[in-house]
Length: 254
Image (tube, rainbow, N blue to C red; front, top):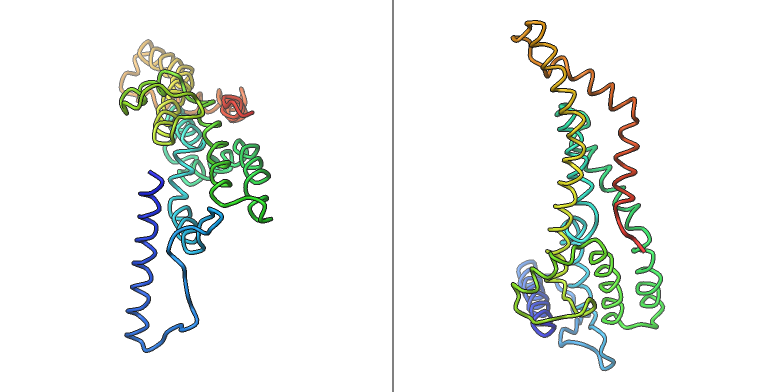
């Protein structure tokens, strides 16, 4: 697996160099003093400069996917979306506000994990006391630990059986199993929280609909009448505080 990834990164680098050479030949410009080593790793087992650049560009490109699939962002945005749908106001808060709030809540919840990665992986690497491969392994271990703390054992066992890789310990599980297991568990937890959020608003809709039918106002849409009551209920119980508090406390961050 490591060899195949390295080969892919080298091929991407070679393709980029080829395009740069064609561009220099076309425009008549070049960089005769530029030399980039793409032959692999250094003597001490560290990645070459070109490989590090390609890895950095790949991480930046896949940044949104990493935030969505390997952090608490998925649960945040789904639950906040359920809150908006339960109240019945499709445009307030807007999707931009929900995504922005989910993003900053993700930064808040993931802060302790990212601080550990910075202290134990990035800082030693920047100080030249740790190789890039070791720093990457340390950072990956912290992210795996966070995801496994939120993942149900049944979900991890399910993907482990599908992969047919045999029995593994917690530390031996690869990201190809940890990430989908984590996402599946996050979806399940988010929908459970969404169900609990919908219950009080459904009760309000039932009460309003029954009241309108008893008064013979069957032509009046119950949603129009129940909307102010649902908003009043949400404000009186300090709904946003309760939802955010439940979301933040639902994560097991050590």
